[in-house]
Amino acid sequence: MAVNIILPPSSLSLWHTKKLIYSTQIRFRIMSSASKSQPQSVASSAVYQVPGLDSHEMDSTADKTFERYSSNTAKRNGKGVSIVWFRNDLRVLDNEALFKAWVSSQAVLPVYCIDPRLFQTTYYFGFPKTGALRAQFIIECLADLKKNLMKKGLNLLIQHGKPEDILPSLAKAFGAHTVYAHKETCSEELQVERSVARGLRQVELSRAQGNSSRSSSTHSPKLQLIWGSTLYHLDDLPFSVGSLPDVYTQFRKSVEAKCTIRGCIRLPTSLGPPPSVDDWGIIPSVEQLGLHSEKVVKGMRFLGGETAALSRVTEYFWNKDLLKIYKETRNGMLGPDYSTKFSPWLASGSLSPRFIYEEVKRYEKERLANDSTYWVLFELIWRDYFRFISIKYGNSFFHLGGPRKVEKRWHQDQKLFETWRNGCTGYPLIDANMKELSASGFMSNRGRQIVCSFLVRDMGIDWRMGAEWFETCLLDYDPCSNYGNWTYGAGVGNDPREDRYFSIPKQAQTYDPDGEHVAFWVPELLTLPKERRNFPGKSYIEQVVPLKFGSSNKHHSQRSKYGGRHSGLRNR
Ligand code: FAD
Image 1 (spheres, helix red, strand yellow):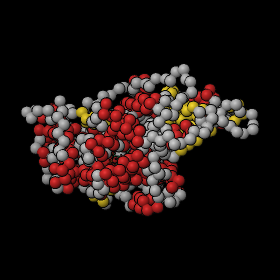
Image 2: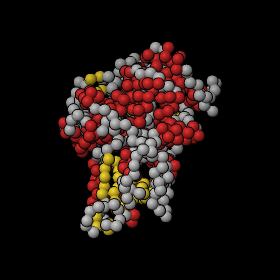
Image 3: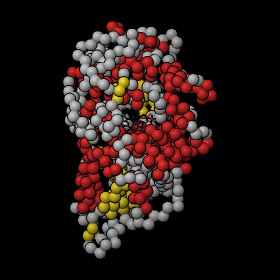
Image 4: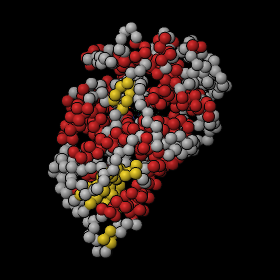
């Protein structure tokens, strides 16, 4: 059994700032050790549920939050039926599509379409488009959404098929006047939006159906798309998307100075009743989606759904009081507490960034405001930025040359790529991070930057192979953040100043000095002295390529199977 030893915040605050980076890692190790006599085997098999609350605590946290965010002042003035098409917005709190559907109708039909295209393969390299762990996470999000909608007097209709086939026939069958949904920005999602709109235009509703006030005898249901995935609203930006700054800092400073963040949408306590439905459908299992179920037996096990998302905010901000040290701990790599871990819920839309903003402001008022409390917002603005940039640059985000159409030679050596993907490169820092990704669907931001740099700079491999593998595995996969960060890391992104090389020895010494992370994921390294775990030399597998800038550490082995390349990149 894991023993949960949490250092009191007061003792943490006494530590030297640099030490704080590792404080959550140390805590993770303590929690992973069952007995002092045999810490190694237990440490290498610890599973962490995120959030760490029990189901009763989570339900009560979500109920209290929903209550705080309920308002019965809004007037319902519509007629007939409206549909809410849930996509990557699997939440009730701050869901404007749901709110608008309620206001404009007498009955709301919430629908989720299990689109078979999401379970096919990635665009260029044919990896599974959705890995089993993310599929499981989404299934949990759906189950939780259904539960929370039922608490509000509604339900969730689960349909298998393409939205463009399902929604028009539902609109016809229920005489729905409008389908409300959240707007997406990338090509695959936009294509679906266009197809749904086209399908709806072909539906003819009689005047008696829907709430049309037009005089013609028939009319078609409309698709109304709503912006709701970012902190700053698209319509509030101080520039058109076409003239969005290409440098993040310019973007951030401008929105911070000139925009305000809209308040969360408050829903009435009851949204019912729904229209009469014979069969609400069944949430599928991972196997029913054509995937082999995978269990997390090591590392973090994220629980899908809005209830878990709201509980993670409460746990991280309020129960563990970690928000005030976020800026010092955020570059950690091991355990649930070095960073917020909000990303899987943000990507599925189970968590609204505006809710996080309001919680940060409440924390600043009730506890304290410092660089750390601000820094969570700073990072969320990065997320906004990539989403807006994806509108500006469209499909070039997914092309080899990226938004700047950089011409560069890449190769697609399958064997080399597989050593990276499977975590067998001979570099413990790379291997540990890649094993973590496969086993849990998560990797720290620090880890992602390091493995990206290694793949594209040291291996010289086509960055899209890495991006597509991330697309398969990540619980928090979102096309804007994923391809935005990969184009950045590959030096083909929209910011011409970015050309970053991450030196593995340097990164290991700074962010995993005791080899805690590598030993957790590559347990054979546990037997080595701490300072050698990242530099195991001959006691570990052979390195598949040399580093571009060689070694900066005396322990570091120069053995390699392949030849090296050199360039004048900025070395981190
Ligand atoms: P925290 O450090 O707690 O940050 C809070 C939130 O800020 C995050 O949840 C996230 O929403 C946002 N954020 C932080 N850093 C970034 C960033 N660099 N870009 C965009 N948003 C950011 N993030 C995704 O959500 N989906 C992806 O598919 C994704 N792919 C990535 C690929 C690469 C190569 C790299 C380098 C980064 C990628 N990121 C992606 C960004 C970042 O690594 C994750 O958002 C972060 O690690 C999630 O952990 P957290 O929630 O604890 O983050």
